[in-house]
Figure 1: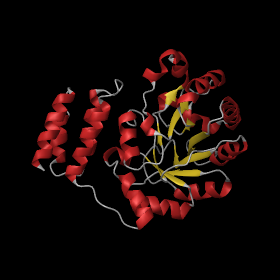
Figure 2: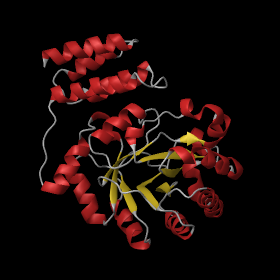
Figure 3: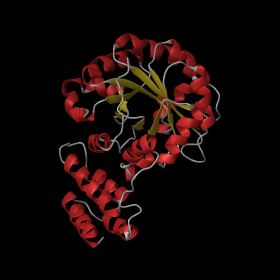
Length: 312
């Protein structure tokens, strides 16, 4: 059974981005669920002895999902047994469009293989009593087999489907086809999470209203505006929401740095990237990002950000 989510807006798993510092920040700002960066099942098995160091997380992030990828059935079963004690939900990635991943018969490549996908879901469901979920795309070159995959997920006892209604070929270009989310919601009886092109609280409400999906998932926009979760929750509850000033954005960045220092896997380039993301929309942000590109130490980034903050 799925946990009770404190809100309808979830943080998407993003490789190189949704580390424990950003996840914790988004939870505090109102995300109903956060998900780890996608993790290779073979790496989980190889790092079993020090899994706490390999996959960093905080108890404050809960409810927390781990997202796995890989199609080796034996390794998948083993990986689930290893991570099961630490996470509230086991999510499976069938959405990543990256070539170096799909070439491993993983993630979105599986959209073309319903029979193998059924075996994967069977293994997952049998391996754990925790909720099992899946994130899918609409297809590889065209929207074709996603309906079959969704029905298999429901038939094999998965607890929820997250749907990004773009094809692998589309990547993140164009516009996500929300009509497909509505079609999915009408097809299955399990909860559906809509994903794609949510940039404002109005977008989140419109997706919920137009598609009937149960929850929404935000990815790229949350990188530069984690306060979006607070705004969505305010808008859904009260029909209005507050803004986020430039000063508040930079204050939020410093909180991110405070959390990031607790986790060795978060490197200087992660902190620099978030400094650049959080400065978007701030006056003088473009010039600031030019300075940040040259910095190679966290202390230097903090100094430049403090000077920027004082000048706002």
